[in-house]
Image (tube, rainbow, N blue to C red; front, side):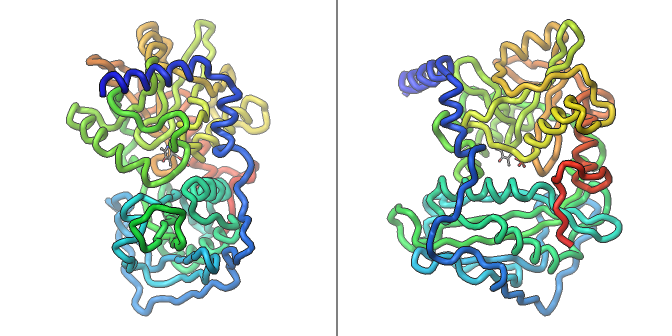
Length: 419
Ligand SMILES: *Cc1c(COP(=O)(O)O)cnc(C)c1O
């Protein structure tokens, strides 16, 4: 066991050293390349067939104060069935409630399951917007293709989701920092314990009102530099948002918590390359001797989930440097890098004072600062300012949230108006 593990590590290591951009290009083609298209001659999702069956008795919207992430769900859900024989069936908006599925359904045995996470915002005037939902739809289609589940027209699903948001619009909080978390899911429900491309599937969308991730100001997290488990591997499925990537991460998280940390910092290969933080993308900021900042995130090499927040942070910083937009208070003496970064570089930079900050990024928390990494029995400390943030994450976070909530004018075409 031990020898086969180190053999694997070695191979992964060689792979990394050979690590040509050609291999990256191949591995990340699915992640960032051309859009997955619906190619069947059977019916696609048809928004004009959408049936809206409103429930009689509406639920009470829970108070916003103390709202726990992802615990309360709105009155309705969207469901769209699919069969290999008939293609996509009628979309329906109906009572939020239990699904009735055969116990032999593939999803329960082989994790034929994928999901998305996105948010809707409602401003004081009642205007409802989504943030770059095309990216979620495209990523969902790539996950579907990877799991041999049916793909679909992204605009058609988005049109149905908009109707769900309009149906349940009084659930979308209007307070600053609040939003409605939208969770699209696609499962394989073939009634058989044989494993094969599913002959039937169910797409559904549920919604949950959420408050700010850090209601009392940013609280930096301590990470456990995890070397005994991997989240993803080269040639694996780390770049897809599929259920089977997440259940195995819970045990390592439990172990990290037992050791006094909050989340796993997933380290990869013999060089202990940094990949992701829990279920967030990762950014590190260094400062060179010339005073220049470098904002670094690992490249999309097939192991990294191509986050919408990750992409938005990169684009904001790059557009700022190119003079296309102005991100208030973001330094101009900054370079943006998508490159590999390993723990040796982090430890050295922490010693020399070149490590400026580290943070995770994702839809739920937006930005999540890190102040400590437990690594090989020692703690590496990372600076944070009194407000829990740093000189690069603070202006980026403000800009991003402003653009999501609509308080900063959208000149990048990221905000999609629902109503
Ligand atoms: C969803 C997710 C992210 C963040 O993606 P966003 O689109 O920014 O929310 C990062 N890493 C993993 C593993 C994820 O599942």
